[in-house]
Length: 211
Image 1 (spheres, rainbow, N blue to C red):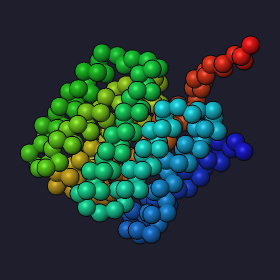
Image 2 (image 1 turned 60 degrees about the vertical axis):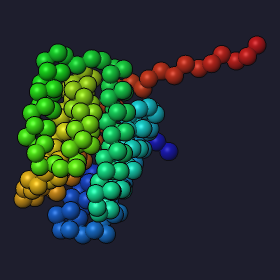
Image 3 (image 1 turned 90 degrees about the vertical axis):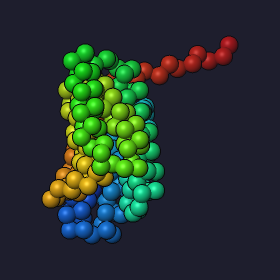
């Protein structure tokens, strides 16, 4: 049964539970709520007729969300690889819909270079992985501006969320950072999914019956 409104409301509840769980450091609730976020938006998109790269991107995000619940550098790197799949899927999907303006390309290129220059000295062994991942992230956020204002905002908020994670990896921890990371991540997913759902699903050619 198609119920996009119910799926979106369930996402809102799961996001709220996750934020409370992060703020209160209740790991059991985090294991329940966080893995539901992206799948609920996949359900929402599919109920709106979207079975495309955005849903695939959310599938990668689901895997990344689960893996990042485990502690340690290996889990961090594998989770980052999953989210690299998210960014590449979104990038390819967005570029099929339009091209960003030159000013957006320049702005995100300068932002990417500047932020990496600031964080680089303190990233240690994570320098190369974060450099590559952040390039895909910035490219996705830039490409999002060529689709719609809502999706462009979602891409920018996604970048802010992951920037805070990168800052933490560089030892720049801020009060309430984990809550802000999760709030901006959930907001980014919601903005991208709802923005994409407002577009007509791509037409799929129907093969003619054999003679």
